[in-house]
Image 1: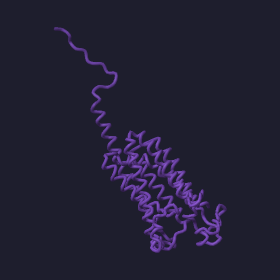
Image 2: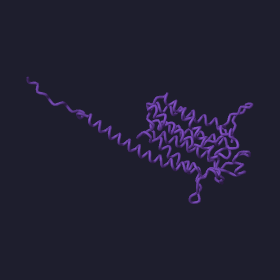
Image 3: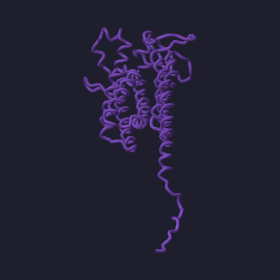
Image 4: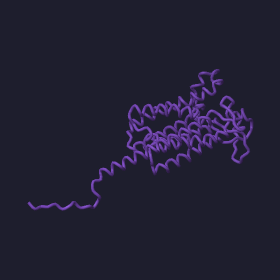
Amino acid sequence: MHPTILKLGNLELHSYGLLLAVAFLVGIQLFLKRGVRRGLPEERLSTLSLILLVLAIIGGRALFVLTHWSEYARDPVGVFRIWEGGLMLYGGYLLAIGGGIAYLRRVGLPIWRVGDAAAPSMALGIGIGRLGCFLNGCCFGTPTHIPWAIRFPSGSYSNFVYPGELLHPSQLYLAAAGGILFALLLSWDRKPRFDGRLFWTYIALDAGVRFFIDFTRYYDETSFLGTLGGLSFNVNQILSVFLVIAAAVMLRRLSRAGAAAHRADAAIGAELEIEPVGSAPAPRDSTP
C-alpha cells in the first residue's frame, strides 16, 4: 500500500490520482486511434473524450457521496478530494454513457460504432485504475484464508475495519478482469459483425464479473439493498444485474437490425447485377 508516491514539501503525488490519470490518458489515446480506423472524425472524438472524462468523474463521485452521505455530511469539503479515492464505477458509467449518447446524436455520429471503438479503452482504463485502488488501500476485500490473501499495513482503513486480518485482494481481481476483458475485446474485434456488439458485450461481461467479485469486497451497511438465500446484495450488484439484462436486450436488437441491413444490402446488390459475370452480349443483325 503506497497512497503517496512522492512528497515535496506540501506537494504530494497520490498513487490513486496518478493511476486514474494514466488510465484516462492511455484509454483516450487508444480510443482515438481505433475511432479514426473506423472512419470517425478525430476532432469530434477528442471533444467526446473530454466530455466523458468530466462526466465519469462527476457521476462516479456523486454516487459514492450519495451512498456514503453520513461521512460527508460532517465534512462537505471532502466531497471534492477525489484524489483520496471514492469513485463508484457505475455512477460514472451511467452519466458518461448518457451524456456521450446525447453528444453523438447532436453531432450526428453513429453511436454504437463509437461505442465499439471505446470498449477496449474502458476495460483497460478500469484495469489500470484498480491498481490505483490497491496502492491507495481503498476498495479492499473481506477476510479470507486463501493462499494469496493480503494484509494491509497498520493505519490503513482496512485495518480499522478488520484489525490485522488477511483480506481478499479484490482490487487486483478487478484489475485482472479489466486486463482480460481488454485482450478479449481486441481479439473479438478482428471479426466485426454489427455496430454495438463489442460495446454491449463488454458491458455484459464487466457487469457479470463485477457481480461475483463484489461478494469478496467490503461494503458498509448503507450500501446493501437486500438479501436473498442468505446472501446480501449491494447497490453495485443490483445495478450489475440491470446492466446485464440491458446489454442482452441491446445485443439482440442490434443483431437483428444488422441482419436486416445485410439482407437489404444483398437485395440491392442482386438488383444491380444486370448480367452474370462472363456472359457475352447477344449478336446483332448488321444487315441494312
